[in-house]
Length: 344
Image (cartoon, rainbow, N blue to C red; front, side, top):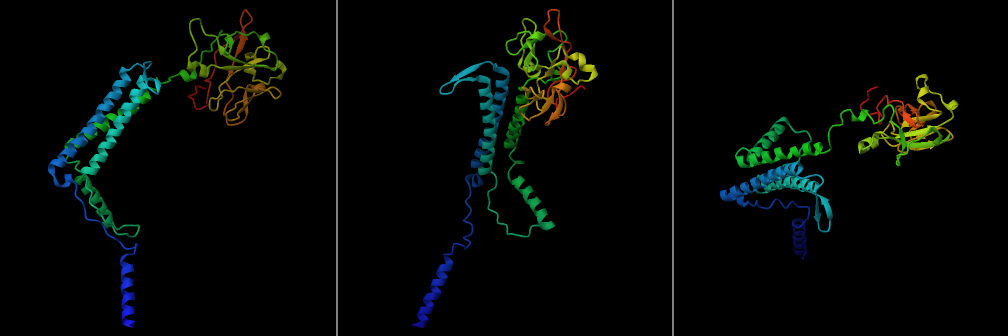
């Protein structure tokens, strides 16, 4: 009885070991693809990959044609989406299709033609020997050779063509941002004799229109027939503040830039270009709401707090023969953030 019982225990132990989930089941038999065994299938797959790459190149050409040939103000109606700018739609679709086809071609190439043999590598210490490192390099070289770049010239040519063309798309997209600014960031529409008008109604101002302690948001009066562009609206805004003349502590060369206690500064913060639109009447401080840079009006908008690195540029003002406030001259330094190219 004891022998039989012992035999059953032994059998049960062996059975549990064989069914252990920790046992290594090994790799299943390798399944060859049609392209591995049939030259015609391999050639067909090669043509399919080449077609995908060629279609990608065609899509990139269509991208360039859309950029050049479709007017920017042309619109197209799409059901459920409404009216859409035709050029932007065409650029987005052709660029997306071009990049998708390159990816699809690469995936199809890898799944049908590149080697897919299972490779087993035993774990080893983190630093491989020099022989192993050289072996890895050889494996990569062999893999590149097996991938067929050298033998499959059709794939190589179409891949290079599609990828070469798609690199043109960022150039066109960057060009679409508009012309280079040149010196535009350093100049404004303010010049000698240009009237100060209220923003946004365009009313010219006299000194009597501004009370002590008051502020006004100002733009330059443009010649008849011309309008402020968006670029102008970014650079030209000015803020007027009126104090008592005895409150000022300005540099000697700027005392005549003020008219009857009215002083003018660029409204564009010298830190990051936000609009300086807050004024503390009790302290005579201008504040930028974005990063809390604070400028002292009494001393010519010197920075007294915050990240701004320089004062707000001051606009010299006076009055014309009719008593309207005008610019005595243009800004003597570029307005706007400190990272803009500066001439002084």
